[in-house]
Length: 26
Image (tube, rainbow, N blue to C red; front, side):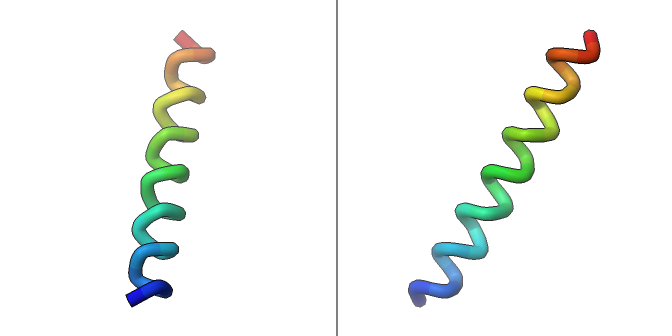
């Protein structure tokens, strides 16, 4: 259960980082 939560958190952080990059580029 814990590992699954960490995996989801990492995926969320990755998605946020991608959004931030788009904002900075635009």
